[in-house]
Length: 341
Image (cartoon, rainbow, N blue to C red; front, side, top):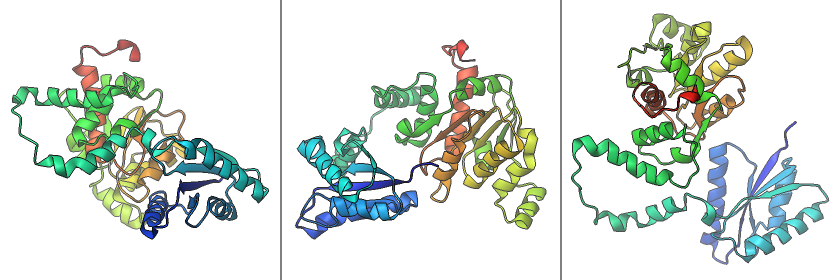
């Protein structure tokens, strides 16, 4: 049985109530985002609850492993000395054996640039100027800019074209770090793309976005009368029932899910229980209800290659961009690495 983790957000504490409220607001948002009550705040001094009280609350909720997130900017004395001492003392007083992991402070996170960018954006905005870029160079320049963001992130070179295509499609640099690839996803995906296997999608928006220039067949059955009626009878979403009706027709083909978490959950269930075997599963549904959970469920698969991402972001454009990136690598990129396949 897996350990039950508790998450303690530690801050220094202030005599100003509004400063401490920022920590409570952060904890509340974390609870809402992860749909879990295993997040608590703990202050070093000047405010309640204390670090000890925060740990005790988590223990009462069944915690047996503690993850500490310091709400500090840099790795100063509080991070390296004071907090570890307070944690050790607090846990010893509980009389329980609790394993502790302490995360790095905020200033060590690569997204710190994004925080500064947001803070200065309005003051910089009136300084922005249009720059003339020849139409034939727009995509090339976009990719150069994205490449600069990727630099230093130690990205697998085989994954890079797909990540760049998703960022280019969405304008969202979060995909730089939140995409997840099964170890065989690209090699098996390229084999299926090369063989022009059928590409099944959960919704017509994904279907419409996939490049068919090289003769790939892209199917979506969500609007068939059988699916519309069956979904109503079984109280399922149309996307989930559509995937259910396809069954073993998905074997050896590509499935791209960009909208419906219910479709992804249904397909993973079918893979586990009915031994459905798609060649590649692209699972990037979007939303705040079960989107991230469905992706984590997808990641429990060992034998089926998949491409997904962490969190609630995703969408039809993302799913189509991933498939299109594979098509471009296979049919348009002369520098592709043949030993991928």
